[in-house]
Amino acid sequence: MTTDKIHVDASQPATLRNLGGTFAYLTLREAMIAWDKLPDKGAATIHIGSRTYTANEIARFNYGLKPRN
Image 1 (tube, one colour):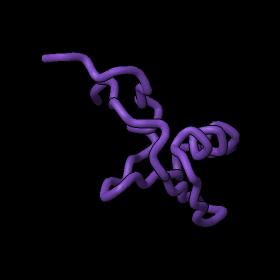
Image 2 (cartoon, helix red, strand yellow; image 1 turned 90 degrees about the vertical axis):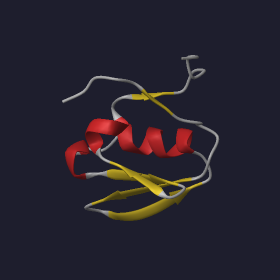
Image 3 (cartoon, one colour; image 1 turned 180 degrees about the horizontal axis):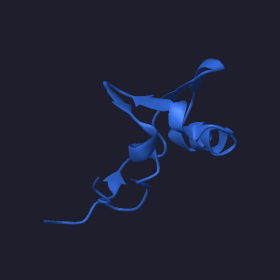
Image 4 (cartoon, rainbow, N blue to C red; image 1 turned 135 degrees about the vertical axis):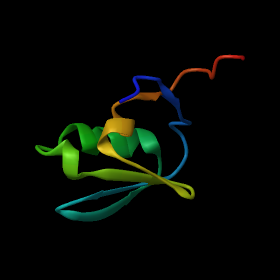
């Protein structure tokens, strides 16, 4: 399992999916607030654009600037 950060733009729209249903948010920041409140984060995913992130990936989100290579 990798621990590398995943750089994301917190201002983009996101969809949170969990056992309680599917919820669209205007920003990833709002979706993350809802995700943080979930009792079972392991079953949840967040969809941004054309990509779906698992709970392991969501926990590694980084909202800062992407480092230069």
